[in-house]
Image 1 (cartoon, rainbow, N blue to C red):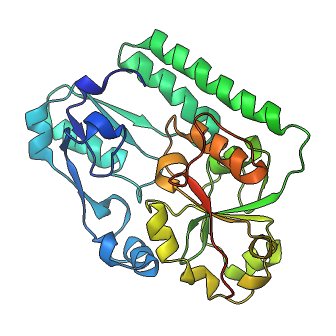
Image 2: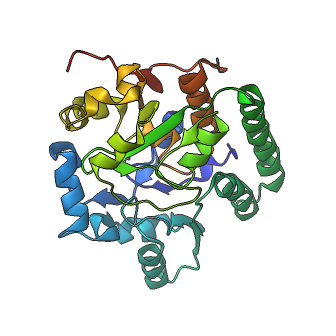
Length: 292
């Protein structure tokens, strides 16, 4: 978005956007757990048990020293999601190369967009950042205008399936901007796991499934973790066929400019509003409802 991809010398093992170009950039982190071979419950247990925070990840300090970046971008919002700011800062200090470490810690939708301005200043692209920010804000305003006055369904956004974990931080604002009423979390809130009985009691009109780090196909493969629970078939969202699988990593879990596309996708989900380009099944699709 800031046209600085040619200057990117290193990335994490989870950085995958834009798909054209970023794949050729050297990876400098790795995960200590094999999430692809573990269930959601096992992953959750590993995160909260023998592994803690950024100990989930390794940082290749040898590669970092060889690449000698001028700036390292990191975060201090969630140690489960990426290598922590402290760990990166300590590694850079040991290198003694004069590298700047910039920690991005957005909690709200406005914070996410403001990071673009911060990066524009750091990467000497303030005018480009301001122009992109204006375009993103205009897209958000357009969605808000289109949903104004429409009925606002009550929406449960689930960011982990087992245990059930509601989406927080900027996701409640995404739902609100798209014309829904978010349940379970307030703006900027760092959430925690909730009991399934809380979901049943809330009786959501729409259920959004967006597990952190899971592509849609992985989410659907584990849908039984919810459908087997008592009261599933009686949820208003289930009875109305309003259970949706979304690409969480692309548009909801990560704080980047694509959260605006997430709002546009949600306006399609909640109100059937078209987007440009159209919302495709790779972004959001209604879960087929067999007779559970």
